[in-house]
Image (cartoon, rainbow, N blue to C red):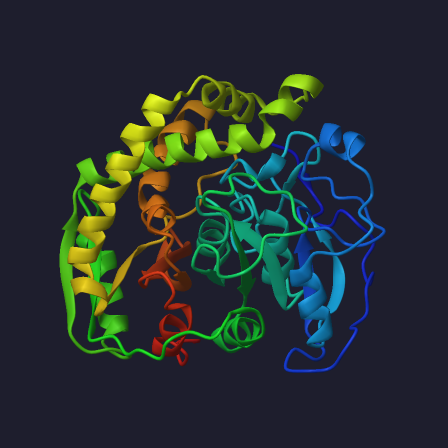
Length: 382
C-alpha cells in the first residue's frame, strides 16, 4: 500500500466565525462534509468529477466554527466511507503515527491521523459501521459515535443513512466532551449503576483484566459476560445486509449511471449490496431486534453501560493479505455492529495495547444517553 498525506486541501482554510468553548481549537474535517467553495471528493475521483462545488457548508461545520474552531483542512477518507481500513487506492494510505507499519483505520483515517500527529485538535468524521471507533483504536485516540439521529447529517455525503452518524476524535477526554457540549442536544440526566464487560469468545483473558482494573477506578459494580462467537457473526451479517440495502438506495443510481472506479474490495461490497432484496432485509431486521434484546439484558434495561474492545486487537499490518483482511473485517464488524444496530452512543478510549501498539475500548450506553456516557468517564484521560 502506498502512503500519502492525510490532507486533501490546503491548510488554514476557514477562520472561526464566532467565539465560544472551542476557541483556538484546530479542526480537521473528513472529506465527506461540505465546505462552501471547496469540492467534496468523498475519497473517489469519479465522485469529485460528477458533483458540483458546494455553495453552503454543513450545519455541523458552521456550528463548530461559530463555537471558535479554526478549520485547518479537509482530510482523506476511504471511498464513500465504505471501509474500515483507512487505505485508498487513488490517494494512498495516511501513515499511522502510532504504528507506522499498520493501517490507520477507516474511513475517518485522515482526521484520525491529523489529530494523532498533533496537527489538529479535533478530527471531524463519521461513523456508520465503526469509522470513528476503529481509527481511534488503531491510532490511540478518544472518539465518540453519538446516538443515531442526535446530530444532523445534512450537508455531507452519506454512506447508509440507516446508520450514519457524525462523530469526532481527540487526544483527550476534555476536548471530546467540549465538542459534545456544542453539538449534542439536551438529554436526560441519568446515572448508571455499573458496567458489563463483554469478553468476545476466544479472546485472551489478560486484556479483560486490564479493562476491569481500569474501570474500577471510575465506576462501581463491574461484571464480565461472554460475547458468544455466534452473536458476533450474527451481528456482522445483520449489519452488513441492512447497511447494504440502505447504501444501495442512497448510491445505486449514481453507481449504475457513472460506473466509478473503486478499489476491488469496495467494488465487491457494492456489487453484493446491489443483489440484496427485501426478503433479506426483513430477515436481517428481525435479527437486529433479537440482538438489541440481548444488549438490553446485558445493560439491565438501561441501568448499566456495556464495555468491549473496539477491535479484535492492534491494527492489521500494511502488508496483511487481502483475504486475511476480509476475514478480520468480519470479526471487527461483529464487534462494532452492536452499537450501530442499537443506534447507541459509543465512547472509544485508548486503554489497551497489543503487540506494543494502541488498542481501544468501547463503552456503549442506551440510545439518547450520550451526555451521561461522557459524564461517567470525564476524568479518564491519562
